[in-house]
Length: 302
Ligand code: CLF
Ligand code: SF4
Image (cartoon, rainbow, N blue to C red; front, side, top):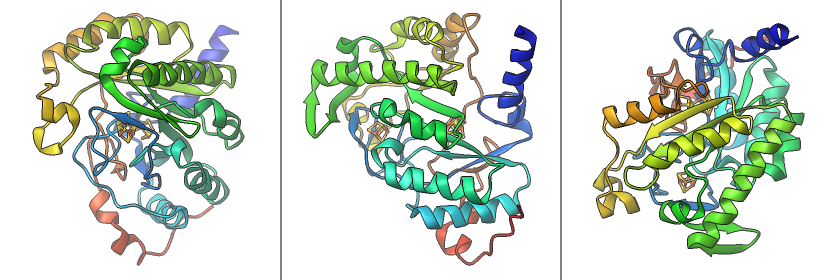
């Protein structure tokens, strides 16, 4: 039975460029930027740019309506045959924009059912939407989980907006962390593959990431992606302005190595934009800007 499970699991990730290192040479993903709002404030984020939980800070994506996004997906799926995955990862938090996010997924599930759906979130609203995610057959969800300790969380998040109230400091971080942990549990119960992204912030959570890794492994996460903090002063983030540095390549690798052996680590992440198109590391987003793709007819055949 175990072998059969493994085969099934392999099949589930075989065409996902982020979940399978092999797949990333052959299969492409696209993101559509339909989700502008966010419900928390990370100290590495400037809202003028894309969500830094799943992207390269300092990049501005062109915001689309769900209908425009669906048109774009069908155009691109017709032009790039290796296109297997549609992800929604910003520019804010997809689950802080549930109507736009789910409308987009519904349109694609209806018109292009063989495209895999993928979602990346800070996790605050995950438990509320996990049934909807399951119904839509979204098999890949990323939670950005930077810490499991609210004291550390207070240094990473300046506020959390939950159920019409804004919480700061340790109180806010505690709410977010509890919801992220519940979200991870809910994904496990729903049998949805979960990747965890952690942003490595030297002096704040670097020594603690091994513990995060242990926690997520014990709670059913499939893959751990430790990403370096990118913190340029000109991005105008809190960390950029306070001079918080990102890790060196060596420091990042050391932490990844400490976690490796415990569970699958992702090491081929390219910190994509919220409107990325193509193979990982091959950004074709500029071929499909709004003024261009709106002029193209969808060639996608069911
Ligand atoms: Fe996009 Fe993320 Fe889905 Fe991949 S990206 S929503 S899981 S389809 Fe991939 Fe890009 Fe790294 Fe993200 S390389 S930033 S891990
Ligand atoms: Fe920015 Fe993303 Fe954090 Fe929201 S979740 S504050 S968009 S990095």
